[in-house]
Length: 155
Image 1 (tube, rainbow, N blue to C red):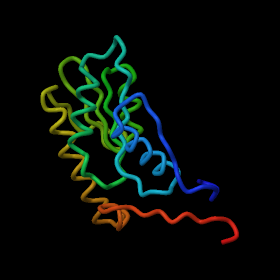
Image 2 (image 1 turned 45 degrees about the vertical axis):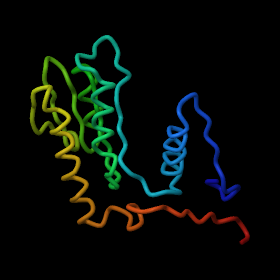
Image 3 (image 1 turned 90 degrees about the horizontal axis):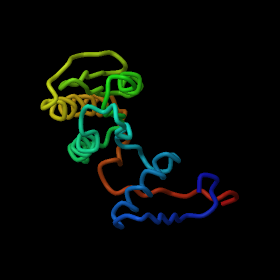
């Protein structure tokens, strides 16, 4: 599809069909065939994680489901690798010791108690998204259905 060959994708997962649609949409986004929306980057929750990373990432994902801006949010569970990953994102958190260090574009902006991490990330992410929209960084058609014209070579 990226080379103009074919106009259909099929995704098969060992998961509910709704997850297949999400993965298909992400593939199209990464190929540049669909406007990008937010990305969540999270750690795999190793033994160093001092917070429930899966729950934290799920809560942030759910809270941002209507965001159409191409914002990258890192949700990390420890202070060992977390700061490095969080610094690479537009917004991130490195969690540990009952608190979360919040990063914007690589800079620590505040430290919040663990029970305020999700609300803090959602508030800041929505502020960043609103600014991106105001600056024209969000594609016009990103709030509605997306129709992707496929350009075939020679047509």
